[in-house]
Image 1 (cartoon, rainbow, N blue to C red):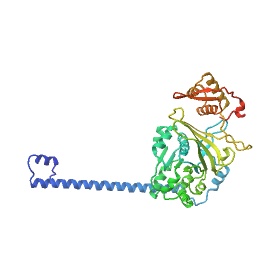
Image 2 (image 1 turned 60 degrees about the vertical axis):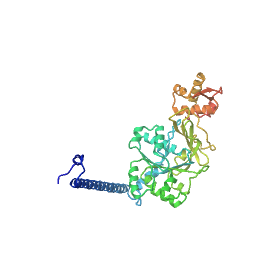
Image 3 (image 1 turned 180 degrees about the vertical axis):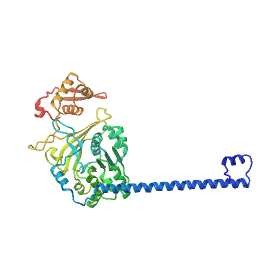
Length: 424
């Protein structure tokens, strides 16, 4: 039978009412076209079903290959590897504190361990994690960020503010994951593939993550089950795992079971907001060491009662900055012999003297003027200006949209630095 085109039918029936033969031809054509459409739909559905089956099979094969690479955890540990680990103290390698004076830039988190940051809601915990993430990305490492609480816009925005280049965020170094359901067997394969190449994995929102699994943060067995399901394999694979959790307002322990702390094999920081991190402000987040199983981080903390002060994250949006100055300053130098000390580290006397001399000659100088005139690291210079203001050597005055600096007349002497003039 010759196929009739709808254009032929339209032309044929343009001027008169169709007869029965033409109606039959039209109905036959419509039926044939409907058969072709249904056949095409079935074909596309079969192709998509084959794709889904192939993808799932690929995920399972990948997961099995990864498990084979890791090997069983129930066999004997290589004694040579164990002795090597015993001879070398584990040191924190992920994230860096700002180098001050002759002190090296110590690390913040341990690889091959589950580390933790906990604090009140909106205290700045995620800023600390993202500060370390930005440093790791800058060093060429790969990071996976599992976000149970926020959204991708907020996380990418903060990383950009912390100086991470757009091409890095668009590339394969940073993997952002925002789960909205439990980690089922098929999802495990996806998660394993997403974190396979990561050096560091951040899990932001432990309580919310447990809720997705139908687990209670107040139940010890549930806490252990969540870590066994989500974090332990990552740490055993040598990755730095950082979990972020809440404490009740006014408290210093995470919400729920004490077993949460027992599951931390690296360092656990209590994050205390000294000044809120927000646009137009100089935010300060204080880090205190609540637990340090390897012991290398507590060794560098300020002596005194626990939790010990380890450092301050400063995120400075003041003076109209659209991109903040951010730095993670270590706590005061170890003293060992004296009582607990928790003092703000004094900037180098040479920088303070240079600032005072410049402002004396240029009353009303802004922060930008000071930075342009004095050759010093930006973070050190800003800290010196703040210290001079706090100690009464400088005063700040709002003039229009800028802040002017003027000397007060108080004389700066070496005694003000207590003999420690190298602690920058």
